[in-house]
Length: 415
Image (cartoon, rainbow, N blue to C red; front, side, top):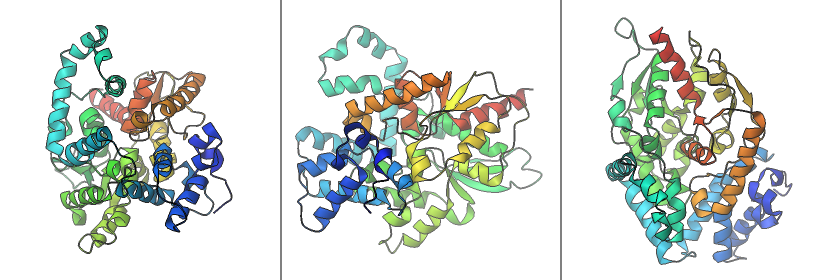
């Protein structure tokens, strides 16, 4: 496909106006390598990691080119060929992809230690003393970006099985599984609790398996396909697919990957059929609420002032879920919000892009925050942990549509 309709939607191309920094240019590079006309060298590798993977090009493409599969395959080729060498890079990939995000209990242990560190206030004291200025540059830049850990993680605040009010008299309308995620679990366990409460208020029995693993999106987007496949199998095994009406995710980036397990496990004879069943049942929380009909809260939301809504790239471009989050916001009596210009333009988080490409990420964040200021909004709602943290780092007061809805339901009980 050569039309170039993707070009004005691509943040990196808009920034540089260089063809190779566009989806069309990157696909041309991929094809040249596939045809044997080009070697997967360092320049190709750097280009693939300069790409945000925001998938805006998929929305724009009239031919329906599934860029995410090409993008992930290209990064996997880069890692297979070991084009990007370096001891530091190998160490961080090993620590994150192979160790921490493959071991949920170890990840929670690290999260608990980070929570303890943050709760003592020692991080703020050392920042005031400029202690972090003694660290290597990359660590010094990363320290302020560390997310604040939740007071308690999801397995503590959500029971394995929760029943909606009145379920003793009659069975719940739906039985759903709840995905708690990894970063979502550590830094946004309260959003998981909000999601469970919203599901209960909409007559859903909620099943939340213990010690859930990472969904594998981090691995798939960074060329570690075999690890992503292993994590996909773990997720499928953790849920009773036959007896669930839906499997609910509340993280836009995770949800896009979670709906692609059938592609990831297409060649696995034991899991291929189950992966297709899995994909059919995974639903974003807003998508699910719109499908079953949102129960409008009887009480008005607290006065938050005027707000706006930023779309997670992988929710709107990957999952094509655009109207449902807005319907959730509109269902809350008294809530005032306005549309955000370029609401579906990437904020610069893009998984770990704000770590690997900090300069470009900062430019995108500044562009996003400029639009937020133009709306006069006091708060921004979004539905992805990466976007949430990025917007917070930009100085915004951030919430999520499902959290606002949960607050309105809780207000009913207090009345």
